[in-house]
Amino acid sequence: MKSSSKCRHLRCGPVLIGLLALTAPVACMGGAQADSVTSRPDQACVVLLHGLARTHRSMHKMAAALQQAGYRTFNMDYPSREFTIEHLAMQVIPEALRQCRSTSCNTIHFVTHSMGGILVRYYLSQHPIERLGRVVMLSPPNQGSEAVDALRENAFFRWFNGPAGRQLGTGPEDIGASLGPVDYPVGVITGNVHAFFDHWLANIIPGADDGKVSVQRAKVEGMSDFLALSCSHAFIMNQAEVIAQTLYFLENGSFRRVRR
Image (cartoon, rainbow, N blue to C red):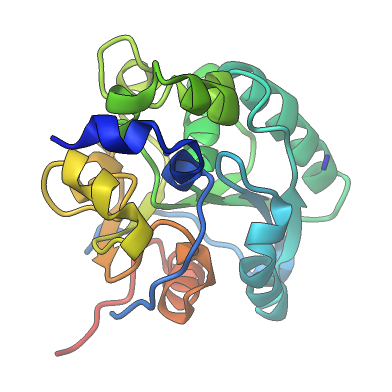
C-alpha cells in the first residue's frame, strides 16, 4: 500500500499547496514521563505514516535511520487526498498491522508526520492494537489548524486537500475534537518556525507555529513527552535532531534532554 490579508492569497491557487502538501525544509536545533514498554529494536517493527498530500517517499530518510538502528520498518503509502480520515485509517493501518504480524516482531511502534498521527489516533479510538509500543508524532494537527478553518471553503483547497483536509480544523465538529486523550505512549515533536512561503499562513495561526499548525495545537492530552524545535512543518521528519529524538523516544519513552 502502498494547508487580515486572506483574500489576496486565496486567489493565488498554487500557494494553497503549501498548506498541507508540504514543501521546503528549515534546519532544526535542539520533557518527560516514561512508560513501561520495553523492546529491543531487533524485536520491534515501526510503521511510518506520511502526511496529507505526501507519499511514503517523504519518510524514506526516517525509515533508513530506523533500519540502521535495527528496526524492521513498514513505510506505508496511502491515497491521502481521496478519502476521509476515518476511511484512510481503516484502510492503511490494518494492512500495516498485517505486515508487522507476518514477522517475528513482538512490539509495534508508529512514527507519523502531520495527518498520519490523526489516522493513528482515530484507529486506536476504535480498535486496540495488540503489542502496541510507542508512537512518535511529528507536527501533528492534534487540535486542528486555524489555517484549515480559514481556507476549507476555498475551491482549490477543497480540490487539492480532499475530504481529509477539510476535517483538520479547530471546531467542535472537526476530527481532533472528537478523539479525546491518548492512553498509550505518545511523544510529540513539532516546529516553531515557518518557511518563507508559509509567512501568510503563519499570520493566520495564533502564537508560535510551524507554518501549518500552532505549537499549542500540536499537543494532545495524555501525551508522554513534547518537544518544540526550530523546524518548519514541511520536512521536519528529515532533520537530524528530530530523527535522533525519535529513536530515543522509541527506546526510552521520553525525549533526550539537551543540556545548555
